[in-house]
Length: 286
Image 1: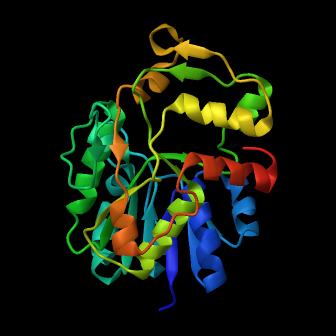
Image 2: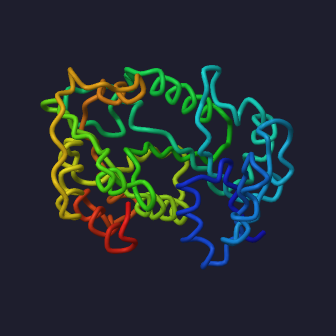
Image 3: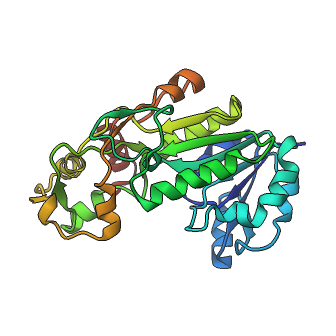
């Protein structure tokens, strides 16, 4: 059987992975809920599947690899709720399954370091839902599951440059606060390396080498653009949505040793400075 990757939720990370696999002769199927997006997917070489999230997905029967990027809801993982029995049936013949999770599963560690063996103590509803979803996927017998805990994702179309240019970027300062990040192209390289070296049951943190305060990232973007530095805003006085504020409830540094040691990945963008400079050089926008 030829290698066929089915991406359930063909989003930002799946599109980046496809750019690695398509030149290698892979067939890639990607689901979308919106028929008007099917044409754009097809233009990139993807076989689009318009799927509402309900009912069977016959294309599972031809897949050799699965990538799951759909977010869990309050009732658990939506893919397993709909397709759990079908996936369980084909699990023994699948070569690789990747589940995209988040480093929010670790919760708050006061700026301390966490790795894949750190107990999961999520502090947010988002993190708790991911812990539950990870467990649900891991409970499927004979599934060659690989869990990828992603840090904050940036890349083309998801950088700070547009906001800095528009004067809407905010430099919110919470003393001691750091976030881990990862460029989408490095996510794709990690996923491709795992596909080439399957290790069912493995969990990987996917982040760069430099957890950093968010205000430093905005400052670097302004420096690269030659624009004025946005004024600092104290976190305690800043107006923020509940979702935005929830990110600041967790403060940790995430170790990425395993992707280097076990998968042989060398990051293209080991810190935000390299990543932002590349974004600006490639497109002139973030």
